[in-house]
Length: 313
Image (cartoon, rainbow, N blue to C red; front, side, top):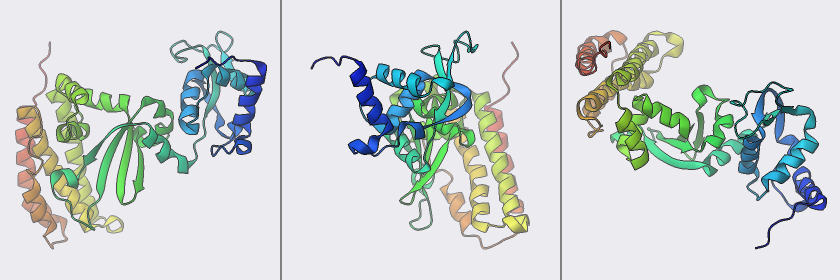
């Protein structure tokens, strides 16, 4: 296969293809509709990756750089005139005060095209799934080139419901950081569907104190949410309250398994408790608090004993 020779005519042809894709049957948006001005500088190599992920067409990097310089020169930033740090402009000192303009209908497709792996979550994993009632939840790990897209969403996680399934998308580096912090939500993923790479990261970085921070925070919030959903009139929702109450104890049970055994081997451990809670017809918080506060306290105590504070050096 002969090497492409970059000539002015080749540049003009590519420019016309990117600026007027409709002339060539392209389904992607024209180049000037793909980017929007912003205050921060985006490295040109990152803009190239993001653009390529959108159009899904072959495009020489050097051609893209030349066209960007011609079409967006007023947004170009070069050190030292623009005083951009080398750390910010990774892979080169040239960048643009631009970011990818994402059409909301494009996001899920772009993210799925950059999928590394996905994990089932929730009731499907625990064995509590009920057809027509339960959601089917997934956590999708995607390549880091999607970080700019994800950064605009809470906790850098994008959520989408498709065909009755609920998907959450997370960049690989963020997923790994959570594993390194012993975050219970991602630990559940790697313990339910082991992947050698991510399981190794989880095992190497398993820290009981970090686990305690993660588990205790979620359990406390779930307990408070259960109460709120029963006592605040405008937020009243019995089903959500019951699920939150269950999660507040289920997660302690899973935390105990991890702290004791280094993994979760029994995802059905708390299912008896869910059956009991969901079948209750009582709608008062006083009832649930009186019945389950002792178990909640006992589980919390057992978990904390396994995850004591680290000794000062």
